[in-house]
Length: 258
Ligand SMILES: Nc1ncnc2c1ncn2[C@@H]1O[C@H](COP(=O)(O)OP(=O)(O)O)[C@@H](O)[C@H]1O
Ligand SMILES: [Mg+2]
Image (cartoon, helix red, strand yellow):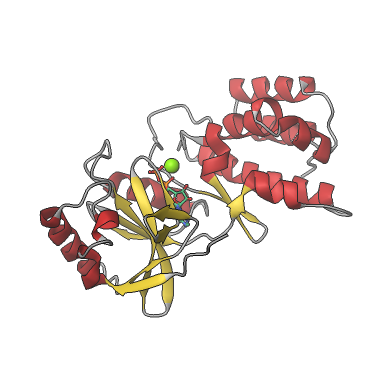
């Protein structure tokens, strides 16, 4: 397995090939690059670090989505995640995502969002693994408790978003939108979030974890619940009324006593 070493550049070098391919992904554009360089200077980004499992050519990234490509950025010794708006993104600006991420941050959810411009969002860098990977790597004594704990932490964050009337919008794809760093699950990517919809964070995440997701039967077994019937009932009740009581009952049906 060939391991590409990480590469660091000063922000000024971002407009040069091959880095330009990332700055104006998916196609190099010098005019747009110049405007973007100004934005980066304004927010004080000093260096870009290309390191991560996702590759564009030889350059490593934290990830690529449909709206942005995410690289590591440095200001002094601090490392951040920098989301760079794709040229082909279906939105004009990162500012709405920034606002909604900040809103989630108010209740302690999401990577901390520091600042944003039209084409960038600077946020806390989360280095971790997918939830599935985290759960599958657990073994031995304490596995059940660890699974319950991580699921509880995740559902509590979903509950906080529900109470805030902020629907994340993409929790059906937990694989891509939850990163476990250490033992803590972070919900990332608020690009599809909205305050205009009925919040479905708890129900969507729980449905994916325990009923419909790829690992749902495995997870049910790990937390000590064999049949999905009771969970389904509790989900329906919570959907009808998003009360504390219904939330606690839902937790109970997946083996979590709070
Ligand atoms: N704060 C972050 N820290 C570390 N990696 C991140 C962070 N935000 C996003 N990523 C990585 O970048 C990928 C794409 O980011 P995402 O916000 O999902 O973009 P999009 O809105 O285009 O879907 C994610 O799947 C994840 O791997
Ligand atoms: Mg995404």
